[in-house]
Image (cartoon, rainbow, N blue to C red; front, side, top):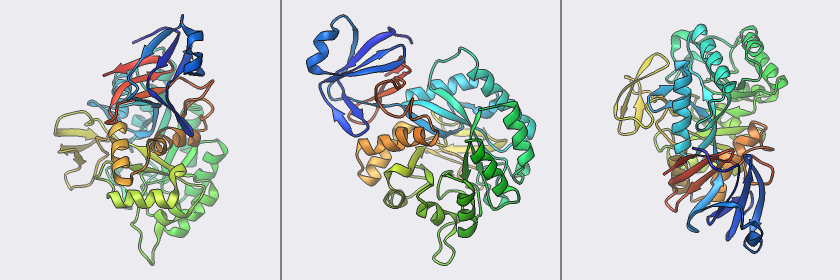
Length: 392
């Protein structure tokens, strides 16, 4: 859906980084925020096309999901442009305006086909929903002791030469790599990733407290779905979770679906890390937005029932969470404000990905990526670079 190159959004409360404006408007031109206009100055823009919404609604920055595998029956690992288009459209309907297309542990050829397809998609003119910012490579450099729903037969130790080949073939495509740093070549790969400005993330790891701290010292700056697929905290074996919670450098993903984490653990993470270091993700897979049934994830059968996706042995297998539901849950679990939530869904991921100069907040000269929410925090409309890509 397209709209005018120059227009204004009027009516809703506008959420700036540290303030909420009422009776104001946002001026957009060619997909960029040109100005935040006060009510007194609106008379100077009478000729500009306007899209007016209820004053009860909330205009917030678009959500950025750094960890999502699929939705609506499609998966990034399908290595299909059609699947990527479908995922992008579905995510936009949930308020996500940008995301990292996230892979699974798979055969080398399958990963390379996926990287090729995402790169082709990014170079095409097909832009119908949420924008793909690049790839989150989740696997194959993981621990066999913490596989989660990753396919163990394709898990390998960190391989610096292999990653360098992928980085050479698909430059500037991989933005984040989840790995188990305690394995051989783990620290070497982390050092290389830091040099190349790629986020190194500890995940699917059995690292001890000391091993995790060594990874942080080497340049690891992020934790993949904190608490999940890593050893639990023990008072004599603090483990990787404690290292992440204590490090001021580390950002941490949380899956706030009420299944992966108890609400008290969400509160603990926010209280320990602080709002500025928590990033809400979905880790959604192809069963998201689908009926209960059987689905594939990385070559393994996932059973979806009553909102819980799991393997036959009961292991959680991604989620069917949406970002719009995640914000409802985190507000319910922690009693945080919508301004706090915006940091965790938009500002923090943009800063982590080093794109905060363009995305992550409603400010002049940034991309016009917005979500319009009603008072129940349901998505009313989504704009990506000034294009309305979804309306309820």
